[in-house]
Each structure stands twice: as C-alpha cells, then as structure tokens.
Image (tube, rainbow, N blue to C red; front, top):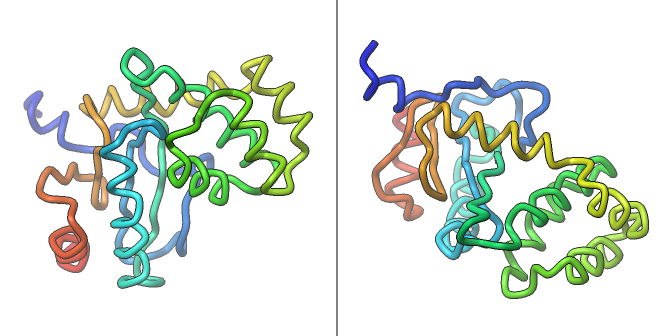
Length: 178
C-alpha cells in the first residue's frame, strides 16, 4: 500500500473503548477527531448534530480526542474532563457542554461544568489534577496520527478519510452514499 492510501484510512478501527452515539450496527460510521478548543470543531459541532438528526439510526457517530495542545492550551484538559465525565456515564453531555462553552475552558470552568451536569465534581477535580485520563486521550491522539490526522476536525466515513466539505448537505450526502 502506498503512504497516501495508508494516511487515508482509519488506522485503529472503532472499538468498545470508543465513545459513540447511534447503533453499533448502523449502516454508516462517522468518526471525528476533534479538539474542544478548536474553533473549526466548534463550527462542525452543530453540523454533526444536524447530520445525526437527518440519518437517525442509520448513523453511528464516534468522537475521538485530538487536542492540538501547542495551539489550544486548554484542549488536553478539556478532553480529560470529557473522559472523567464518561467514567460517570456522561461523556456526551460534557462533550456538548465543552463545545457550547468553548469560550471558557479553564480548569475552574471544567469543574463547574461537571457540577452543573450532576457529576461528582470533587472526583472530576481529583481525576483532572492526577491526569487519570491523560493516557486515554493520548491513545486517541496517537490513533489519529497513525491515521494521517494533522488538524481538526478530521472525519472518517466507514474508515475512509473524508476531505470534502463538512457542511451539513455535502457531509450528509457523503454519508448517504456510504
């Protein structure tokens, strides 16, 4: 296989450790490598929600962390907090909150969001301070690197990198074709 082809496919298949919405046996799987502090990911967030609404149970959406920490200083901690929320069964509500309040991602804000969402905020604070989920975030990041991801958001449809427009209509059309 050529390097170009290798970079265009998902190196780590979707598995049990991934966060996903939609049926595991959906006709199409959309994987996003994202960064909670990235303005482009913030713009993609409602587009993905719209595409999920349109495709319903035919779509499984997977989110993987790809914090660009050299550019977005709060992205790694935001990803760790999402994982801490996931450990309490609330990954997706934290995912949504982080994108909706992207303007405030300091550690104090992250703990505040945990409390607002009904999580054990003291536990989240301890886990964030101890970087309990740093390795998990790093694993997502490295799977992205191995898949040729170099920016966010990066999407894969059924394991193949999608480089066309990720506005709602073209993305939904590509998912329908897949």
